[in-house]
Length: 118
Length: 110
Image 1 (cartoon, chains in turn blue, red):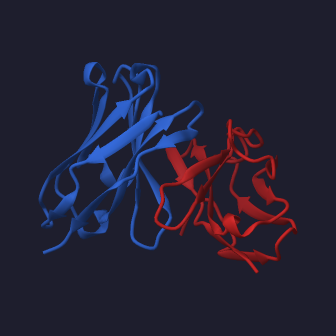
Image 2: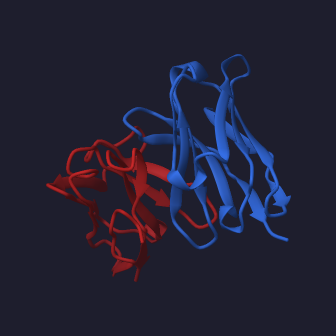
């Protein structure tokens, strides 16, 4: 079964850092754009960042530009999100998702919770 | 305030048909393919519709999508209790250079 599994979430203080990981299995990882989407408690999904197959193009939502960095390791079939200068409003479940084409996210992980609080 | 506008809630009886609307602009829905996602409680979103009206493999044909100008709709026919969920539209936005989601619509099957 095609699968994405996130890890790395947790509780962090405002201004802190966290690195999320997403392990892909049973599909050709380097054929796809990959994306992070987050969902704050009780809110709808919010697209965070996307990265091209070879890592040469990246897009970010304005609210995380300069603080978050998306990256990937195709040899290890892994996606990452380095989050620095975290804010309370970054508190959310973070999902990694596969872009099946045309920004249609066809495979999602189970999510990892990030809580930013003092 | 979401870029794409959806009604907060809709409700309908079992076996009936319901539609959920999604309103955008020429920067997103007007020129880009619309996606619809279903999110069951405590679960990750699931892709239901892509490119305005196409169904991914394995999605029931009770779901259908349409688009006219800067507005899109999701229709669900033969409503079942298992369809109770939150539904979100999404599209790429050329002005924001990113994907935007609607605020979501909670479907209640009466």
